[in-house]
Length: 252
Image (cartoon, rainbow, N blue to C red; front, side, top):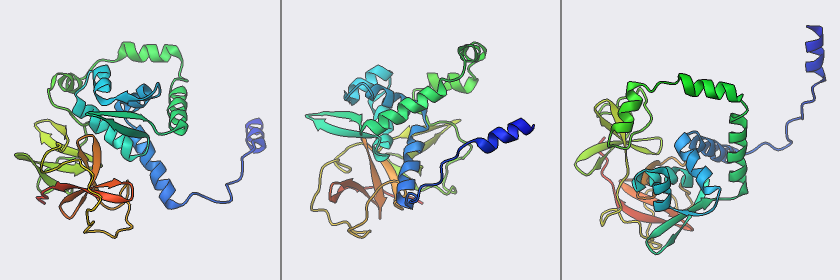
């Protein structure tokens, strides 16, 4: 007991840095970790670690719908973990910088420190639940299960999407469907285009306001990017201005 206490006392702990990060930086960093906290999104970052890839190619590699991959990339883009560029009709994504690569590598190296026998045992003893089987066979893109039930009385913002109502939840567009929740995306359309509108007058917020995680406006998945809901309109941060991506009807 004494030896353990002595060893602990001898352990060197570096003092706290003289200047701690500001709240805005901590918020951005927390948003990055939140975006990383999903195996499917992390898998996309692993793919992009090898270089720039087109969305359609990523969808083929992951054997997923383009809309599903786009929704995941939108969250990574909002968290500044990836960058994108358009070439003709194709959208290409890449890691933002080496810091992102280091984050992914460090996380995977740390997660694989468990012994190979434990990993093998886990694979051997795992039996898919009925819910997992249902999710594989279901034709809808589904969100990870959560206990909340969306509806007119819930605290999440409901928006009209086609012939139904979806609910905004942590940057996702959720649609309750029987025993699960579908992931939806507002489609690119004449009503909700994805064009640049540099002359748009940003009514609803100060001109100096910057949209992003924690900005106070709800994030809405739209096509292959994230918009922000401001007074019934979709705003998209673009350089030194906001693009107007059309109206979105709020129903509660």
